[in-house]
Length: 291
Length: 139
Image 1 (tube, rainbow over the protein chains, first blue to last red):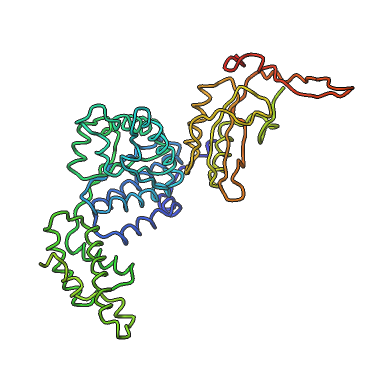
Image 2: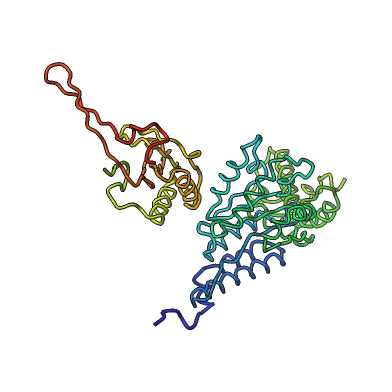
């Protein structure tokens, strides 16, 4: 007798893994990012089916889940990576589900023989979870053929290939530079199954993000504040060094600064709770973007 | 003569799965793990050679197991142990230590009697293995 099930209930598996909660949270808490969310759902479905196949005794080679996240600054790459670690953990693909975020400095050493132990230490810390390498293209410096970054890439490749069950590697960075990076490191590119592109946010999405950030900080916009933000965002988007959600956060931080200043100027008076919470249009309109 | 240092040394040899489970426990307690090896089995030899740096901030035993396996490959015939260090104030010491590799043949110890003044005797032990210079024992 074989004790393998003849039928498998994907719905039950899904409920069992509690992954739909994380996916719903992802939908509810992150604005926009439609293609990214769709891709994450695909990956979740793949892993669930893989698990069902295992229950039925079908060959289930664990799929390669190394990913690259490309997108402009402030499009939510790190935030999604954190969620990804949770999702993979719930689906039983990684054992611990923590995220280790590193950059070139954490992987590459300063003298001969320093890089390998350093990279290996980071890899050991990331085992059982997700290793997130931000601005991965700095690992490769084509102008210096003796750069130690190459050594780090080689160790990384080896672990990505041989210890797929132990960790998932996510390489992140700006789209154009990642493309050149992958072109010059074909070995790396071919070991990455999922390339996720993070689109820029539309102005309405940025407004939504601003509202959520303020809500989380227990602030709110007055009607004039809403109108000012509506005008501010398209102007700011045209300026150099625009970094999507990160720019929004910075703009809000400066608005809070101005609000504090404004309230401080009237210190003879008792302030109400609402006044402490409200950001007025003038707090936003004082920005140099309107100048 | 089987030497019995550290935890579990009266039990049959731990399998790799059991070693892994012990490491998982130690990591769960927040202890740092070190791998050490020696070819001098004297019980007072508590400073063994370090196999790489101690490993801090690990979450999963896979990294430690890789080091244990690498150390075994480099030193297949001598003693290897895993130490778990607890940095909690008040402990600040090794909380768990167990042997994960030992020589196939452990020749044991010679008990030496040294006669001093009158009928007094001082005792000491000496491992038969250490009659050979370091690095050439257990071959």
